[in-house]
Length: 107
Image 1 (tube, rainbow, N blue to C red):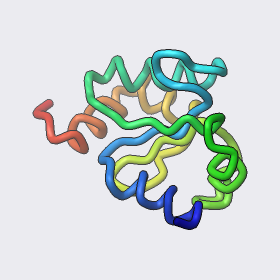
Image 2: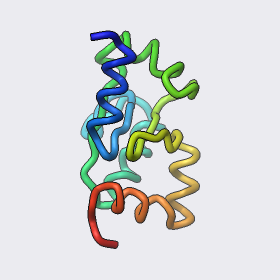
Image 3: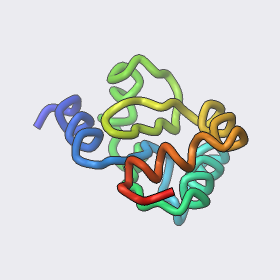
């Protein structure tokens, strides 16, 4: 399967997915760590893709949604953004309702 198809499959088959360096349990960069912690604090299940474990995804994800950095959060197939945008949404109280709705939870 082509790498862009694999990225699209991960985005389309998970209501919430984070492409990050490492895993939520063992993040390999500060931004990925803090972003995964925000998602966990929103009390939703989410999928993750360790971009360090897949060099093809690491190289090609930035052109998938024209977003150059990691982590990247996708909700219902759409790029939400990276750490800075997630942090801003989290601080404004916008991230948790968005994620809980995507996960099918009641607020």
